[in-house]
Image (cartoon, rainbow over the protein chains, first blue to last red):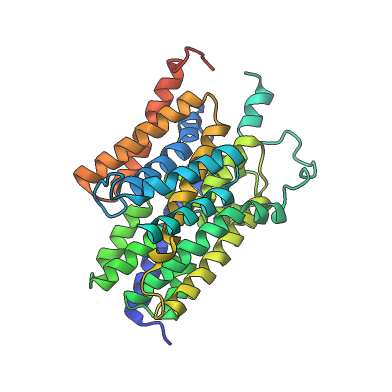
Length: 108
Length: 256
């Protein structure tokens, strides 16, 4: 079992280009005072980015918008949503989602 | 808004020498990571299986999960490698795919600026969408210590590595991770994280508005331009819209 040179290059290359965006802001923020409006803007980023990723995961799991008839993701998302809204538990949400998906695939 | 309140919101303690409150340390961070552990076990395993079927050895899979440490990025890398894309193409694509971490990091960084330099950078280096979601929910509730963050990150990191390697080893046996619904773990985790985020941000209407704008734009963007910019563009646009809506007092006319 080995690590081939051409694969190592890919691993290191992708690792590096991912590392930089992750740490540059951390380094900059130590030296810069962020204006309040920038702070507030950044405060919206978590919701915006999670919603963006989620929308693509749910609506376009294969790359094209899929309606509920073919799209199990949306259906399986409902018990997950209900679980987290009622219990505030992230684990519960994930487990509910996985179980529902497994069930749906077995039944359909 | 008083200076004290605004600093509390920014996540800074006004007693730099005070011991952390109960449950604020490394172990607490590990505990907070539990949902991510569940999610990463599923996705990491699936990633390992996919990487194996794309032709990577288990050693390469392990290294990839340790050095890249990114779910979406690894799936894409595996796919592109399996399809025969050259290294340069893969690296450039992954750069754009993960560029959104710039925003995540910028959003999180202010909360940890008191940390020693190396720890601050380490926190950034291990940033992922999911741990970012958990950390943001926590910082929304109160100050978060660097040790807590490290507990969160390290637990996610180790879980990811083990799951990937397991998937790689099992890769020759499992032909379809979809059978056990594990592929839905990522979406389920995002659902949970979004709800928790919306809960911690008031007013709810504002958060929902931003989420809807972001979601619609990212799907529209993906349909029209299909590429890696969509999430970043949708996020930036939605965050800007949020700022505008907040200043205008939307949705009920209140102003901060």
